[in-house]
Amino acid sequence: MKEKISLAAARRIALAAQGFSDVRPGAAPDRRHLRRVLSRTGLFQIDSVAAVVRAHYMPLYSRLGPYPVALLDNATVGRKRLLFEYWAHEASLLPVETWPLLRWRMERARRNDPAEIYKGLAQWAKGNRAFIDEIYEEVKARGPLPASGIDGHKGKGGWWGWSDAKAAFEWLFWAGLITTHSRRGFERLYDLPERVLPKSVLDLPVPSARDAHRELLAISARAHGVATYACLRDYFRLAPDETKAGIEELVEDGTLLPVRVEGWGRPAFLHKDARAPRRIEARALLAPFDPVVFERARAEALFGFRYRIEIYTPADKRQYGYYVLPFLLGDRIVARVDLRADRPAGVLRVHAAYGERGAPADTAAHLVEELKRMQGWLGLERLDIAPAGDLGPALLDATGQPIAKRA
Image 1 (cartoon, one colour):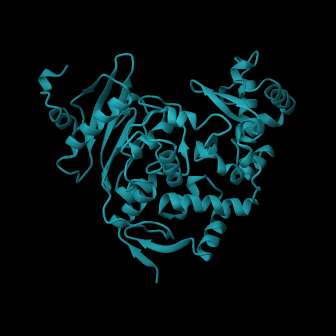
Image 2 (cartoon, rainbow, N blue to C red):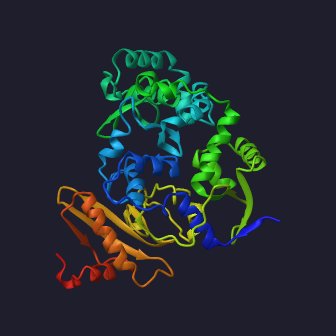
Image 3 (cartoon, one colour):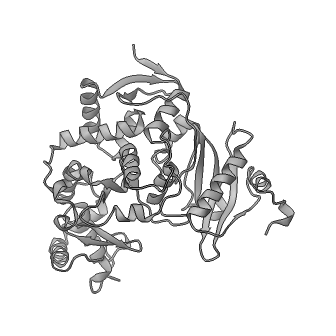
């Protein structure tokens, strides 16, 4: 009979797997701490929205507390880099050792496999291979090179509103023929992998697609602690049949243990090395793209937390706000807060805050402390809280500022 795990235990297992039971560093975090977090998460998702801070910076902050962002920036450049960019769970930063495990996806992208590359981009590429080859030769001769470094890159009207040059760069990137050398602002500068990645990584053997899928699923399982088939598949966006075969092999070799989780109507799998601490004493704001919540069905099943990002929802139809961060306290998500970093004014603005059902009475006090910590990390001068949302007035009260005397 399968072992049965309570929902509370599943939450603790999942949060421990993501690094929330690890002791935060007493001094400034360094590469050792970055490596430790990476060993838990396996990736950092990238997103262009910078309402608070770009998404890939947040998972380290949520787990380590304030850290110099140069720590992450420096890990993404140079031949001694720890990370590279590629498509995993959307665009992601991944440990360089993962490069060989994704070569199968690159090779399928070169064949314009619609399962591994955007259909529109694949169709565009079929009729523009000569132009793509020209762009590759430009990178080879002139790299590192941004898409904007190509004459006429604005206004040719390629796929998805991109210029033809941008579409060519993206196809080459997906195909693994070029990769990110560095970024200028948020714009990628592209170069050849052999001029960017550590030689030790390029020399690693390339596994078969089947073996790579199994290894990626093992990384996903370790990052989840306990998970369903859908969770395991989603982490690296793998195909159904290959996911099923990989899970079966991991069960057979003892890496995954079939279990039942209270309240989950689907089979679940426990990683053999998953830890089950008695308590989780976390206190962290999470990015919308943090691995704890980026698979929305999992977040709802684990935490009873229904979460939808409303960036693309018209303002008058938003329920919670434009850029809403979940607040983790202990082993529960107890609140959500609509934040914006107003850098010109030097203010972290709390537009609204909402408590979750069953949130403890001291939620507002803990959230204020975390907001102050984030304000300091972002280098902003003050915190401005609007008394909006059911938790907004309590937040403002926790700062000692009466609503009528708000600045």
